[in-house]
Length: 103
Image (cartoon, rainbow, N blue to C red; front, side, top):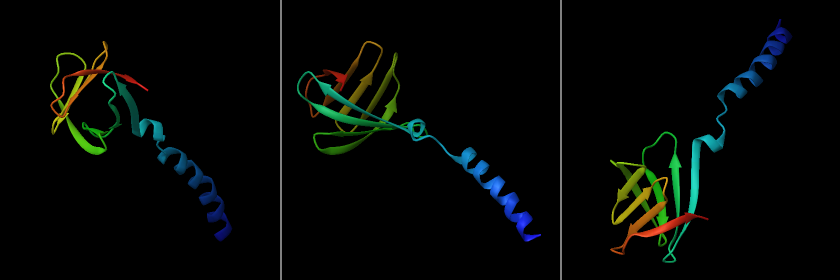
């Protein structure tokens, strides 16, 4: 009877592993941007979270999602990130708004 249990477990465990696996590409998204004023930053978006996690000027910044008429707007601290169909802009450290592109 023990070897029968082993056969059942051998058939069930791989199937359970397939169902439980979440592809990493769906769980998170990292994007690197280069801006016209020379600024570079990385933004991370997670499927389970409404925040954007940015590293700009060597420091981490958590940006909360804000209300936007079109596209997405995130802000926190002295950083504002706008992502629309027309393009992406960032404003930080009391600098003017600058256009950015994916690297």
